Length: 164
Image (cartoon, rainbow, N blue to C red):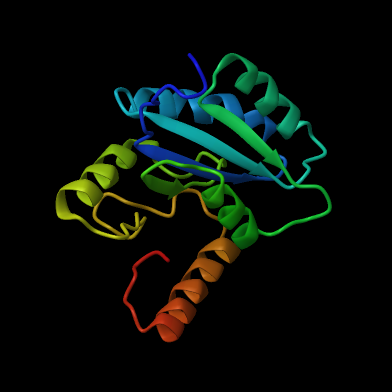
């Protein structure tokens, strides 16, 4: 395709911050492939220079699948900045942020995407606190941190997000 040929716009850009997620990458992508059948999407992994070879694996997968790419950050770390860099790297109309730890249910993505489009919303937030959701196998300290984060975000934002 010539460089000046029109391209089909992406429906969804998935931003996935990673650190030492090598073993989860293939199952994560397989889940996305099943859940997003018919959706034009790309996955941008933002890797904080994982020593386990996460970035190299993603790069190898991306050589075969143009929907997959990696931004490997050297000597930089942090979830918020990784999300921002990934968001800035996509031209997709909608953006989702997911963890690669296989605890987020990729099957809700089409529902969220539809809700954004149909209701002309700016933001949709998935929650593990809704009917049918759960904290899964979270350790007690992770449940505590999640609860603390919820209370803090509510105090700061004055918005009642169930899972910020």
